[in-house]
Amino acid sequence: MLKNVANPPRRAASLSRDTIIDTAIALLDADGESGLTFRALAARLSTGAGAIYWHVANKDDLFTAASDAVVARAMEDAPAGDTPQAGIRAVALAVFAAMDAHPWLGSALSRAPGQLPTVRILERLGRQVEALGVPHEKQWVAACALLNYLLGVSGQNAANAVNARGAGLERAHFLDSMAATWSRLDAQAFPFARKVAGQLRTHDDREDFLAGIDLIVQGMQAPQAGC
Amino acid sequence: MLKNVANPPRRAASLSRDTIIDTAIALLDADGESGLTFRALAARLSTGAGAIYWHVANKDDLFTAASDAVVARAMEDAPAGDTPQAGIRAVALAVFAAMDAHPWLGSALSRAPGQLPTVRILERLGRQVEALGVPHEKQWVAACALLNYLLGVSGQNAANAVNARGAGLERAHFLDSMAATWSRLDAQAFPFARKVAGQLRTHDDREDFLAGIDLIVQGMQAPQAGC
DNA sequence: ACCTGAACACCGTTCAAGT
DNA sequence: ACCTGAACACCGTTCAAGT
Image: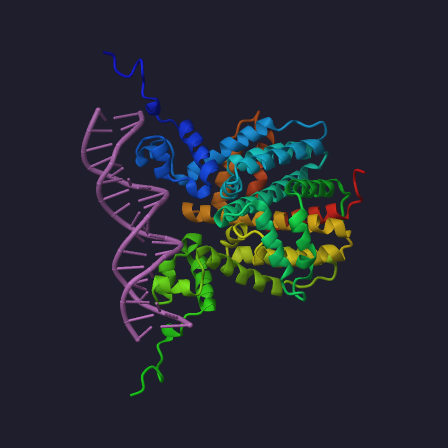
């Protein structure tokens, strides 16, 4: 009788870097950042924990590889845009959508500065900044400003996802209790925070995110200030 | 003989939340984020690991409390500024200086969205945004844009500090190897990244950070686009 | 070349027991 | 009220040993 030919054991389809990364993404999506564990990964791949190290340097490597796969797909999906402004918005929205689908993404991006995933985003932003007519010497600062803003939002959203998950709350209740805390702050020391506390409850993450992008793009187009 | 009066045992000065937080900051400054451990903390305070839990809820609580102490001090030190623009720059520089002195700060801020440390910064930024004459409905977006940009930079800087420490490299060599990687990227896929790779080597973190702030401020002052 | 899985050196957190 | 420290349930990573 032939063994393992007519009915090959599916699980043993031989480990590869890509299957490991895909499984890592599935694990992260299902259980959050704390769900990515070499043991859990090994169990899902029905192999030993140490086997993974043959294809992956360490956990950081795996984490940023997972984020790179997600970002690369998001960048492919982002439409080019008719105008540079639209192109920038499209890239930003693609990242935002990816963050929404993979709440751990922001944390991964924050941990891999200058690595492939963030460079992919910077590349796309930079090209549009150039198309916008920003002079050469200012393109670096402009593209980085967009990227850093985007990473700032990512990081906060990622942390919110972790905290909400930890507290077992859904988003709405989570924001409600945050707004309540803000409005209980000392009136002398925190007038602004108290004033905007209400907006926390009603605001739309995506809208505000885009409004911030537009703000920065407007700054890039403004006539030079100073000398 | 009187015991512990003429010569009281310094270490036993009784645990308090504040001494725990100060010791945590010292530990973080000395050994980075991975240096903050309940066991290491207990050793420095010459107490048991479990004792700390009487004054602190858990490690997250401790980490954000440490960052809050640092941010509160930074906000106190930030000069008011003669103009709103100068005030915003002053706040940004104060945070940047704190990040420089405490490279773990960015990571802590990223993990505590909407908590006291970030609200302190938002408060200061928001007041200046208001003073700048930004209309009420747009103050939230404007202040958040500044904060998110600032948090994005913080996070990247914090991660760079960790990575450089891990690789045992100083900043210059670290950026050099990053620039080298960028200029080795595929010419078709990464034209922009290759073009700006050189700037990685020569750029001044602080200058670029401030230039980004100015960009956003300019965007806030620009006449409304769109309808 | 690739995989196994026990072992090592850690973690955060809890909790009975002490004072 | 506050502290002790052993114990629990985990981690990432390594490495001899297998195929």
